[in-house]
Length: 499
Image 1 (cartoon, rainbow, N blue to C red):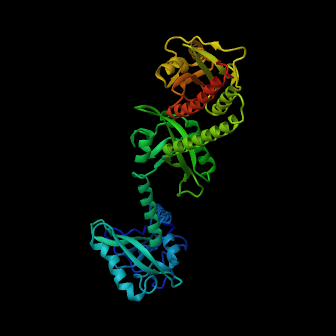
Image 2 (image 1 turned 180 degrees about the vertical axis):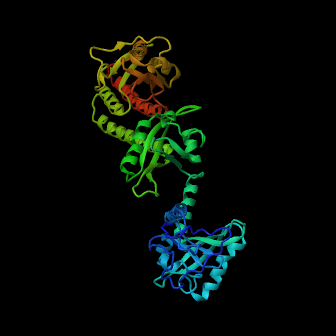
Image 3 (image 1 turned 45 degrees about the horizontal axis):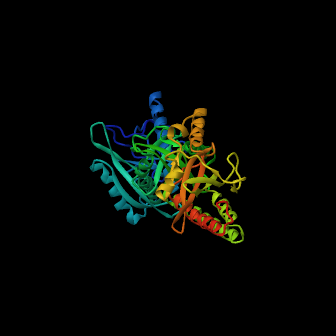
């Protein structure tokens, strides 16, 4: 509501005073009236105001300023129904100025149709006889003759003796009130248990409001997460998330949702999640210049969907590789060349090294391998086959014994240790098993053809890659079956290295 200035004494209804009738009824001004700007009132003291002290003048100016600063329209009536106050917002909505409104008796004929005036005035003045606020909706008239539906809240004004001395009425356009109520309802609904996370983050990038979904996703309670740095909740990926929040604060919301992979610290251990996130910059509506209050961060956990998509992409790629390998192998005259070509196609995106060890009697003999010190194709061992000195319990020997597959990785103490000690530990682990020094994850699978064990195929990954999982085992066994067929053919025709 608007505030204004008044040249009269304080125009609040006094405790035992009866308001004077204004000198005008036509809205054209009167003694002690306003200066033509902002809220206006009819002085309750009929004197000229010359005897009033500076305190009374300051009180009138303060009251006018308060009225002029309000965001809702406000008018007031004395006990006889005469308008005593009218602020700028009331003037904006209805078009009637303070000079035209203050001093009129009721709304009849100017702010309300005469046919409705009696009912409207009665419902407004009824607030004098009831405690609390009364809420009504009226159709008021603008100065240009158009009508506007307003929602009013009216309450009585008591004098010092406790007797009703008048009524004040705050009103706003119904559509504006409904818009406000919808905005409040929407914000409350978003912060309840909806199917996506909502987090309000302050300018220091700390959560200030967290809904139930977000609390579950972050692994805490709605109150326990407030004010904590995101780095305490997110082990990996917090830098990217905070960078996005800072960008929104500085530049505004991005045009499309973003996906973040994060690792969370939970009571059950660390878990990796993918969040599809959208951001909104929050600014105060109470200032002329937008003042950032923080960021609204909305997200959904799409981990299952992303993993399924990744698995589908991986399966599509591997199927394509096997198809291309089959076409290449069909053109190979030498079955062992076909076997190594198959392994070259299988390595792409799957492993860093591959070792082909074939059975000769009771021993495994190194028949083909990729270079140990650099990436390269799988080649037959030059100068003849070399027996491998695998110790007891070696994964390749276990695969032969079980007639299946064995997965293994460097121990946590070696692979996860910081600094050079961790690197040397992993290298020692690989060297002990007769593998290249950078190997940290291994998958050994047996070669079987016509009911016989022909050897072992071992795939190796470096420490910067994930360990082999069950889907990788299925793919390795598919490759091993095709390699075993080529090796069996090579032995059958007497052209392979195993002869």
